[in-house]
Length: 115
Ligand code: FES
Image 1 (cartoon, rainbow, N blue to C red):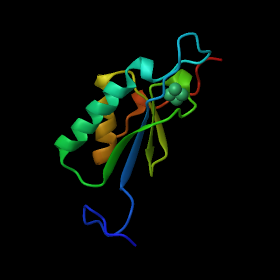
Image 2: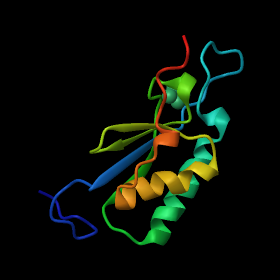
Image 3: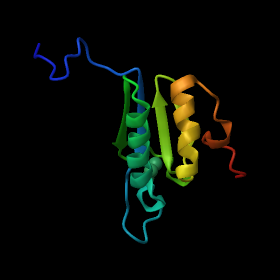
Image 4: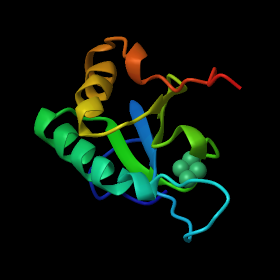
């Protein structure tokens, strides 16, 4: 096994956050998270996690998470919880969920969309 450049003893993170960064061309049949500023939200959340100075949290861009109509799509593990991020205002709720377990029901992805 190769040495880890950061001195870690085994692979993995305590919390893994994926934010969809997928984009589609104009006229596509499904919406996409990139057009809803997901990459800006991703960068801002990374910054907030850095500033929190907590080890073991990995925030990264994902491809399409296939819940495009509910995006910006976000999923966190190991909780397996899905969130719809509506803007920077939602990032503190998400961060509090990750850091101290505070529930964030207002940003949970809503599958009951009236259809
Ligand atoms: S484009 Fe983001 S979930 Fe599909």
